[in-house]
Amino acid sequence: MTDQQFPRHDARARALLRAMFDAAVASADPGKVVAPHLPRPPTGRCVVVGAGKAAAAMAAAVEAAWPDVPLSGVVVTPYGYGVETRRIQVRSAAHPVPDANSEAAAREILAAVRGLREEDLVLVLISGGGSSVMASPAEGITLADKQAVNRLLLTSGLDIRTMNAVRRRLSAIKGGKLAVAAAPAQVVTLGISDIPGDDVAAIASGPSVPDVTASLDLAEVVRVLGPALPAAAARRLLAVEPPAPLPARVDFRLVGTPAAALAAAAAVARAEGIEPVILGDDLEGESHELGTDMARLTLQPIDRPTVYLSGGETTVTLAGGSTGVGGRNTELLLSLAIALNGRAGVWSLAADTDGEDGASRAAGAVAGPDTIARATAKALDPAGFLREHDSGSFFAALGDLLVTGPTRTNVNDFRAILVLPQGATL
Image (cartoon, rainbow, N blue to C red; front, side, top):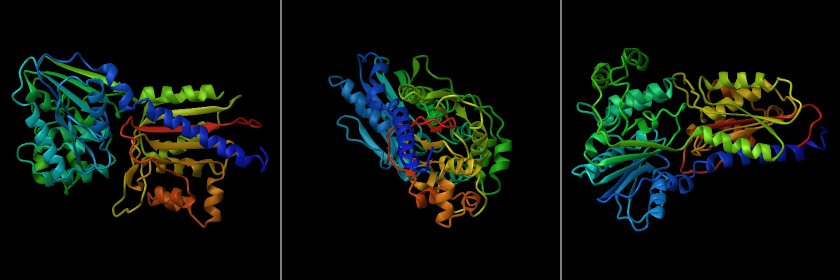
């Protein structure tokens, strides 16, 4: 590829990566995926509750699909993720650390499902982000305790499954407790998964799913969270008790998944003559380490344009006092760019499908063969930004952040690495 050809190929590569990302997000659009999974309308009342980044959009989809079904209820979503509804109330609360509105919304949801009868239906709409915006502290735990724990979790480096085990144990609504409160009504949950492996007990910490971690020994987690862990929370985390038995009439239906998102992106690639290779929807580990690993992946011999697709949720373990702006996706992408060091014919995109990657307020970023050279021309030190976990600022300085705003869905992280064989064009 000549220097004269590069701008055209760069624009084309970036457009293709963005098209794949957009297709991944669209695969979990509540307006498309909710209606086909709705149960039969009940003969009694239909109460709709829910929590998460897609909750309001899912509620609007239920209203559109059931225009003649009497609906009531309330869902809660992070600030900025609301949509207009007519019959189902929408509340907003804080994410990723709960606030007073998170607690108020949880109480309102619990009140909405109590006192129902067998002929009634509780429709639960959950998605990523639900743990924070629907926060009902367990007995002996305060909202301040939960806030402190959430802050510790976000910088702990613990994986998402462990974080959700902690959240369930400190909650009066998660871990199946919402379904228990709704008995004897039928409970049907529609979930958009942001969890590696689609563990339904982990989506929004499973308010309508049995808590399989109720008897798990969390002593090591208490040790990792350290002396800043509130004493009441530590006692609760160390307590082991059997999960509350759920009512028999409980059903869970996944309507959007990371695997479906990657399949949608792969279809875009094939239509453009690019060979998609799906690495998996559950890749985890430290963001900067996975970025380095993926750089090595691009060394594999190929005979046609290829895109490596993956999902999952990596982690960023922050050192004390770190004030960097960014998230796990921009950190992974910066690590990848450093490892590639300007290698020709490789473009990449890493972003969160909810539209928000950490503190940068961007969904993620895009990198190309000229990323490091452009940074050097601006006197930016890529390795320094990586050390300070300030990847968002790095890509902002280059104009390479991917800014979408709230997508009102969430099927976890999306990564695409486009590789051209030597001499190939797009």
